[in-house]
Structure formats: C-alpha cells, structure tokens
Amino acid sequence: MGVQIREYSHLDEEHVLDLSLRAWAPVFASMRHVQGEELFLRLHGDWREYQRKAVQQVLSESAMQVWVAETDGRVAGFVAATVSEPDRLIGEVSMLAVDPDAQGSGIGARLTEHATAWLRDAGMQVAMIDTGGDPGHAPARHVYEKADYTLMPVARYFKAL
Image 1 (cartoon, rainbow, N blue to C red):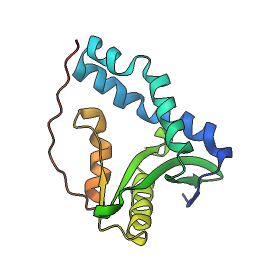
Image 2 (cartoon, rainbow, N blue to C red):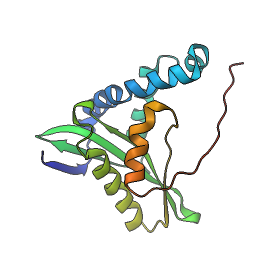
Image 3 (cartoon, rainbow, N blue to C red):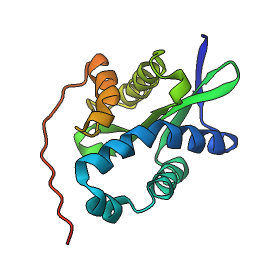
C-alpha cells in the first residue's frame, strides 16, 4: 500500500471527521468502561459530537500544522502538531487518527514521524504527545513508543460532582 503524506486541505474535513469518529469509537468505549457511565457522560456527553467539535477546532486553528495520509487516493489518517511552548522549545503532536481499515499498516507511525520531523525542523528541542492509559489507547501508546517517545506516568483523577 503506497502512502502519501501531504498538507491538510479544507476539502479533507469530512473525510478526517469520519475516519476520526470511527477510529476513536473503541477508545471512547474503553473510557466509558473505565470511567463509568455517569462520569463519562459528564465529561463527554454524546462522545461523537464532543470529538467532532474537538477535531474541527484542531483543523481550524491557525497555529496548528495538519497533514493527511492518503492511500489509493483516499484519506486514511491525519496528524496535527503545534509549537506549544516556544520559550521552552516544546512542540506537541496534538491529535492523530488512522482509519480503522488502515490501522496496523504503519500509517500512524509514518504520520507521527512526519509531525515529529516538522517539530524538529521548527527548532523544537522536545516533542510531546498525550494519550490515555486505558486499554482503548493501547494502540496509540504502541505507536508513540515505537517512535521513541518516552512515557511519563501521570495520574489524573476525576470525580462526578
């Protein structure tokens, strides 16, 4: 499968939104299981609408660099990166999703490498990526560890009020 990575175009928006929701369905199912129904609903409500808005925000931010991966002329994944702390020379890969039909083919790794290279070329000395520690995020953690990112354990607690 030939993969081409190119800059995102507004014409890609619906493809990116569609693949993102399909890619993150297992992630949100995992979070629902870990967090419990009440807390999950308070944090995410209708997770599809919540995530759709999050992706649209990333796609529209002027400081964000976004690329898509194409296979056979169709969008199979996307990645977004930004300079998050310019004074400390820290950049962030802020969002990544790969179409479920293309997962496991190396597209996530290629997109992560592309975004990381952009951050390096932008003068960043550190790149970071956040992801969940739940079972649904295991494939993402695998991609980031394969790309030589170092896991920094963080404890974040939530409580429904």
